[in-house]
Image (cartoon, rainbow, N blue to C red; front, top):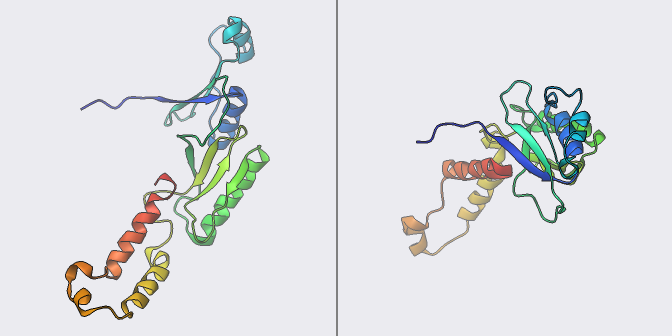
Amino acid sequence: MASVKKFQVAFDRAERERVARFRCEVLGHVVPPPPEGFATWDEYDRSLPPERRGAAFACTDPSGAGPRLFFQRVPEGKTVKNRLHLDVRVGTGLVGEERLAALEAECARLLALGAVRVLPADDHDESCLVMRDVEGNECCLDRRDGRAVRPVRQLTTRAVSAASTTRRTRRPASHRLNPAHRRPDGEALRRVVAGKARRRCGG
């Protein structure tokens, strides 16, 4: 079995410093101090060969708990949805109106920093709120903490009601007698819907 290893997350970006400083504001990260012998990162950057100037930037979790985020300049622009994005935990432990209020408050803060809102969280799907950063890359405000986004009883009311209605529809006797054709009971439905909720937004 492999040992647990520390890692950094690398992102390809056009404006690496602008995106890195935005992420600092989003996550509470900080820009690490410049290398020894340099007062600022600009001073360090000017010391590099021309082809390496402005090539990369980074930010770190001041607590040391999270990975270093490394932003490297690339010539090509974004053309499709990113294969990786960050889900930022907001309102963990909250449900319903309290949770939506927490998401909206954080969304407003990020909009002021230059983010763009893509999809809203609402009463139907409150697992995450999809946004784009200052360079158009996807990120989500997300409350996922291993539990269903709403109490299971609320989440499955319509599903159980629909199932009850379906049961009242007359079916052929052969279908009703075959155990393989029986519809799941209420508890099974609750497990199915709760599982779908956990899979939302990468949960």
